[in-house]
Length: 135
Image (cartoon, rainbow, N blue to C red; front, side, top):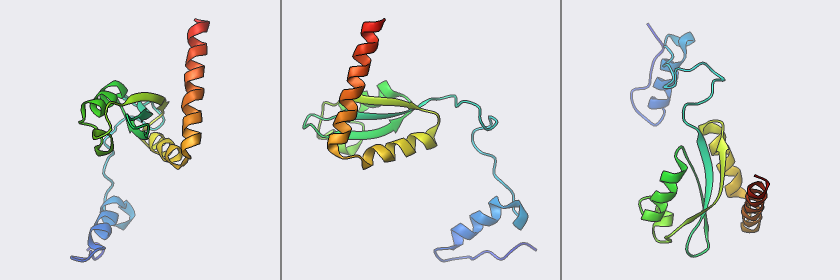
């Protein structure tokens, strides 16, 4: 017989999940949703983005479809924060390897001060302008 699983209480779900996901404890591992071997590029690229709202505030998020997400923010169907601050304009975006790295980058951006975020957006705008002139 397998290990005892708590039937109720706050730890019941966690203990059941641990048993199911640990083959050494009589359970089995669930396959990940993504059946590609580790290290293969993701089918959908992830982006970290920053938009400037009408009131000048900045909103940071992640998405797999940058144009659709910015349009959703501008239409009022995006995040609750941006609904009352429309329209929004994209001021920064960066491609990430996968969702985990996008979330980490988003967290680091949210930890920056407003002046650091603004410096980042103006630096990015200057780099784009230089690239356009070079081509």
